[in-house]
Amino acid sequence: MKIGIDAKWFFNGPPSGRVVIKELLKELLSDNYKADEFYVFLNKADKGLEFPYQQDNIKLVYISSFNNLISNAIILPRHSKKHKLDIVLFQNFGTFSKIKNVVYIHDLLYLDFPQYYSFKERLYLSLLKPLAKRANVIVTISETERRRIMKHKLGTNNVYFVYHGVDAKFKPLKAHDKFQIETFKKKYNLPDQFILYLGRLNIRKNITNLITAMQFVDIPLVIVGENNHKSENLSTTINTLSLNDKIIFTGYIEENELPLSYALATIFCFPSYAEGFGLPPFGSYG
Image 1 (cartoon, rainbow, N blue to C red):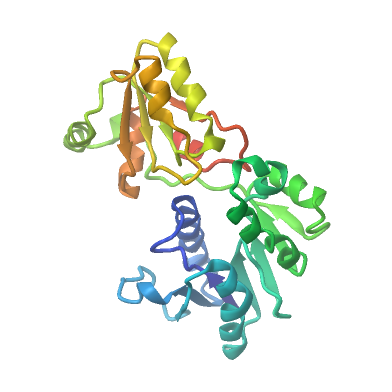
Image 2 (cartoon, helix red, strand yellow):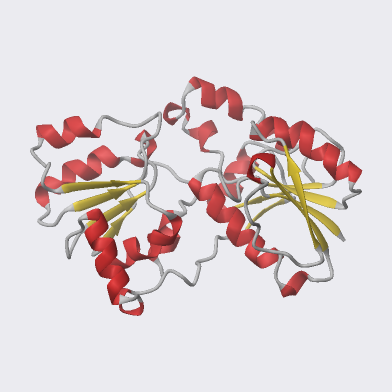
């Protein structure tokens, strides 16, 4: 079978989406599926980067991807027809084309919780629903999200959920190298004990209430993640409650540093108001 995989986020994309794509390809491009031929669609802007899988049954196709919606709805299907693919796996947005396709929908939170999304985001995501209705199969990340998809009538008997896996790199602290541990702690000025929040600094993540609760806790809170355009004014809360000595912001950290973040944490907190099934908790299971 000739299978196309939308992997445009493999090198540069949303942090959680990038992790999902990498783990998905790690399995699909393993020896378990050598009988199939895979066409991996990557962003043309990343053509100079080394793709780690080089087997004979893997073909790399670089396409324009300035916009995931337009790329999936129009550009990627043209390449799929050119290569006569049997089926294509899309990320979030499907296609109006008649090619056989599976759409991997990470969540539909924008439909049930529009207050956490800007008008521009809601407008952009509005085409996700009509495109998904044309999919042969819809895959999502949890039973909760499967029910949400069916509630909004994107699919019926063709909707399945597959839980994210946990990468073996997430392991207890004792399994990590001592020198790497000390180097990491020094780099981000981490204390011996701390509460960890990891994720986008978005209003949906309920970080203000987590910070507020820190006035009743004796150990610091370490916040790992980048500001989002729907971020709250966290500094106001911190200053008002005089919590400057209790809150440590690391900003964005590299993917290979995530395992140590979890391993060093005394407690991991995930206080989101709403999630399909947030990716960060899987790392904390390591």
